[in-house]
Image (cartoon, rainbow over all chains, first blue to last red; front, side):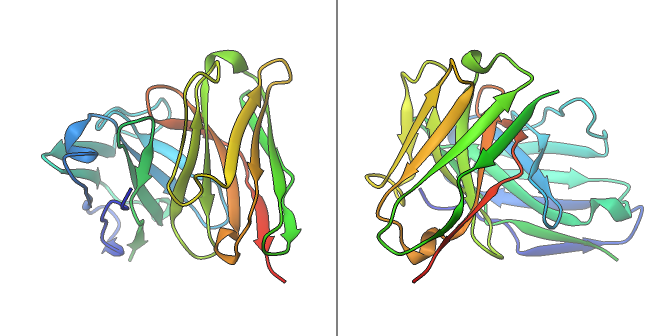
Length: 110
Length: 118
C-alpha cells in the first residue's frame, strides 16, 4: 500500500493548460481503470473531479480531463482559472477492496 | 441533498480509544459502500477503511489494521469507526465518504478532528 507518486507542485498562468501525473504500479493504476482525481481547497473537504480514469461527474467543467497510460494516470486542466488553485489528489483501486491515494499536488495559478 | 456529518473527534491520550460516527441523509444509505479517509495536519489524504453496503466486505489500510474497526447500521443510516490503541501519528481530520461505485468517492463529510496527545 505505497502512495502513488505525484509532483509536489505545478503552476500555470490563467488560460494555460497544466497536467498532473500520478504514477503507480501494475497492482493499482496499471491494473484497473479505477483512477479518480480529487480537488481540495484549504480547509475544505475533497471534491471528486474525475472518476474511472476519464469520466467527469455532472457539474465539473469540461476543462478537466483525465487519461491513463500504463502505470501512470494524468489530470489535465485546460483554460486555467484562478479558482482552480488547490491541491489535487489521485486515487486508485489497489485490489482486495483497498484504495491508495497519491501524495497530492499543489496547483498554483500565477 | 446528500449529506454526511462526522462526529466523535476530540483529544485523546496515546493508547486511548475513540469512536467516530458519520450520519448520512439524502440518499438510500443501505445501497452504498462507504469509506473512511484521513488527513494529518498539512499532509495528504490517506485511505483507511472500506465497508460494502451490507457489511459483507470490509478492508483496512495496513497502518490501521488490527487497531481500527469499521461498521455501519443501515437502520440508523450511520457509519462508524472504532479506533483503539491510538498513536500520535493518528492525529488527523477524519472524513467519511460515499462510494458511488465502483471505487470513487462522490460525497464527503466535513471531517472531524482527532488529536492524539498526552
